[in-house]
Image (cartoon, rainbow, N blue to C red):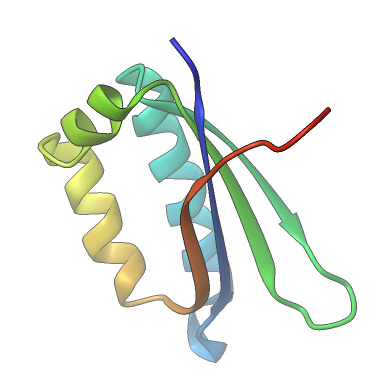
Length: 96
């Protein structure tokens, strides 16, 4: 079973900075609890954008997360708190 790397780049809406980061942590916890993925979040000091690295356990885990009510609530809430800059759904390792 090979993990699937996804990357999302986002910025919190000006009035939602703390709320967005709280929701990102809640979402990561819900995904981890469900066994769907593991997340790491970084902040680019130059642009201020946040970079979310998500390692899905499998394609099946990704599909299952789309049906988890707790995960769906977090995604819906987050959609009101951030502006998505870019998303790369499935990255494939080359070399290394």
